[in-house]
Amino acid sequence: MLIGRSGILREPTIEEASVRPGALMTSVVAAHAVRRKGEDGLRVERRLIGGEVVLCAVVVDGHAGHQAALFVVDHIIEFICEESHDDASGSAVSQALERAFLRLSALVCEDSLHTSGTTATVCLINETRGELTTGHVGTSAAFLLPASPAAETLPSVPLTQEHRLAESKAERTRVLALGAKLGHAIKDGQPTGPLRAFPCGVTCARALGDRDCAPFVSPMPDMTVMPFPEGDAYVLIASAGVWDAISRETVFKTVLKARDAREAAEAIVSKALRAKGSRDITCLCILVATADIAPSTPPPEPLFDVPYGVESPPMEAPTPSAAALTSITIAEDLIRT
Image (cartoon, rainbow, N blue to C red; front, side, top):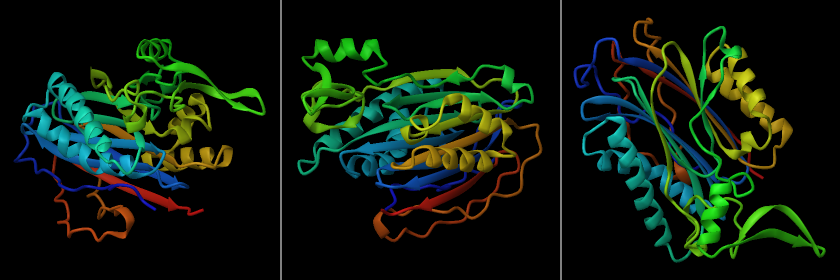
């Protein structure tokens, strides 16, 4: 069972984009995923916002069903573009992200038949102005990692914050103020497992959806806006199936040892699968380089993940742009249990 779409839906030509000399960047994207429950999803798409080229990368990790994750991954990029009002600046797209998250959560909660929810992490790479904006709720963490030979001595930059109740004092304070009770599940008369908020029993109270857990589950995203650093760098987004299975240090070292983004994504998922393979595992790895580096070969024909066997509408093959080229390679391992 697949959730969402992956691939290039529209490749803007260089004539369409407002190019700032020296600022344009190229991105190479690779994703690897293992589906156990069918509640993870990812989507990568390049869009023009106000004439600027923006790479939109999305990872979702659903819970209590697939419905929220499926709806969010299929609509979030369109909502962000609508809410941006053709302004691709960091301040504008961060506000667009916030409005899109709130809209999506409200729509998911209108579904009276389901009570599912989902994490959502969105990285918007403005390749025209060299700017990175990230918005997220939940546990699908993202990091910026230098790709230089000396990167092992350089710190990674977290693009997301910790939202689990056990790890976040701010989240515990917030849900208690809204009337939630904190505690642990009881098994054989003894408390067990992670800290949870009751009623509902969630371990993370930042999500889209979760209709039955209102009012203390919040869809309000945390945001980071930053200029992209000089030199090559990786943007890494992964679901909790990665971060709960292997350490951050292992993930970062795996990226730096890999020959390219695809090898990095595959190796990370493989290690997470060996360590704790009982859940969905998704890793999205984006290598971003400055435009003075020679463009790579034209991108391969995109592979689309079509949800639940619904036939995908025909897509025109992307036209490679001479100075702004996004190569997307998607590798999906489908494991049904």
